[in-house]
Image (cartoon, rainbow, N blue to C red):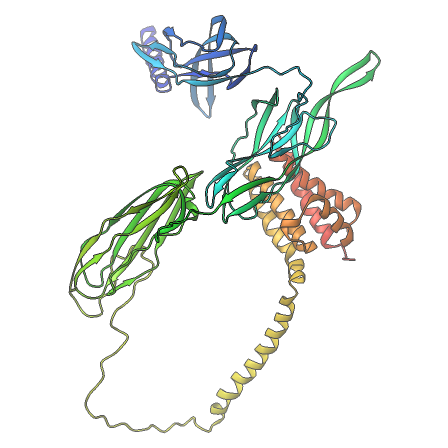
Amino acid sequence: MMKKLFFILTILTSCNILSKADNVSFSTSAPRQVVKGQTFQVTFTLINANGQDIRVPDFPGCRILYGPAVSQGSQYSNINGRATSQTEESYVYTLRAEKEGTYQIGAATIKVGGKQMSTSPVSLKILPPDKQSAGNGNGSPSSEGSAVSPSSDTETFARLIASPTQVYEQQAISVAIKLYTRSDISGLGATTFPTFEGFAVQEIPIANPQMELEHYNGKNYRTVVVKRYIIFPQHAGQLKISQGKYEVSIQVLRPVRSPFGIMNTMQEVSKTITTAPVTIHVSPFPAGKPASFMSAVGSFSMNSSITRESLKTNEAVTVKLVIKGRGNVKYIKNPEIKFPEDFEVYDPKIDVKVNGLDGTRIIEYTAIPRHPGDFTIPSAEFSYFDSGSKTYKTLKTPEYHLKVAKGTGSSSSSISDFTDKESVRLLNQDIHFIKLNKQNLQKEQSVIYGSLVYWLWYILPALLFIAFAIINRKQAQANANIALMKNKKANKVATKRLKIAGKYLQSHDKTAFYDEVLKAVWGYLSDKLNLPLSVLTRDNVAIELSKYGAAEELVDSFMAILDTCEFAQYAPAQNDDAMDKLYADTVEAIGKLESTVKK
């Protein structure tokens, strides 16, 4: 019995070791930025294995104070009958930053079961310490493209950073809105983001904003990028990016009198900060543009392919162009392919995929030959402007030589092998055979002519037309009052959005829930107050609601809903009870405004 129990335990242990062996990893964790003189730690962690003979890299710019401190641990969990375990072996080095600069901590190695594992290198930036001079050491920015609103706290501000500011038409510009603080930011309130008139705008999503250290104007700040864009100027001239306005809640130390004397405590303070307008200098394209220039700016490559070069009449042939590169891929024009005259050409199928500045544009041109013979599809050209070398460059595809044979089968053969499969046409059926011999035609006598049914065929359509005209006229008069129509439909549109938000609430998708509620409220207020979304702000909504006849308590309810949704994008995630309350408050506020009589 004891031998059998020992055998079972051995098997289970072996299985556990094999299971853990599939998840063995060795990694490095270290801060991305530190300040000169600061003490910090670099940790090398081995998961689900026992290591031997660890070798660590040099730590450039730093001095080792202590290490390695070795620790081991394990954890076990059983969820729904599925048992998992994990072991962790850590090697911790305590360092002090000695020299400013950007360094790379190389790979560490360790032996596991006779094999060597290594970590990936990590980057470390050592920032200079704060300057103690009184010259410009208050943290207020002085460079172009940033501004600080007047406040007693001069160490929290925002910058709009655009690079470059001297460009050509359609050249990509990177724009970031960055907050700087030496305090703790607890939330972001009402915001007015800049407008980009004269630019095509592509917003870059920021999935998880991270706080980082940055040395600016002699001081070290904690920073976070709240918005990031890539913009493309659409014409030459001096184009301006407008200012932005942001409300932030920060934690500051304030003296408070207590029974034990004056004590410093953390208090939350609301602060409004702005970014100053930024001017972009846009130059026109240089002279000598090629005929095949498609307003593309950047660096591109192009290749082409054809589905077949031997085919029969009424069979489709597709030429595919693939343009890859870095630049304004999303906004360029498509190159032209000139098919022979005897070909029936269809609109191209276009697929564009972009990731930041990198992208791919796929264009599929489909045509159908109607007659047999030998044909040539000439080379297609695509020209772009290389902003680096400030020259035009032209790319070409090869020529394609087609051999088209006469199709077999009846004259009413259908198009086959059509790329997008969306339309199938029958050919040569628009004209039927005409009889050539003489025909004896006789007029048939109608029993309907002159009867009551005959006259009703004329009278009933006339009456229906008159009724339709009257109803249509009334409807047109009602539709002409766009503001009235929007006002009537405001509640219905908001209800649909809130139903969607309710689904997100049930699935506990907090980000989507707050975003949908915010869209529902802004859209409802836009329709109800007859104000375009582009001009809606927190201040003018409060004023217009009061004009509409809403009570002060109802106005405060709407403001609280908007604030909660905005805070939720940057503040820690709210619990389900808070989401339920917000949903109920939104439905109640909209219901009360619907019952309010407009002044």
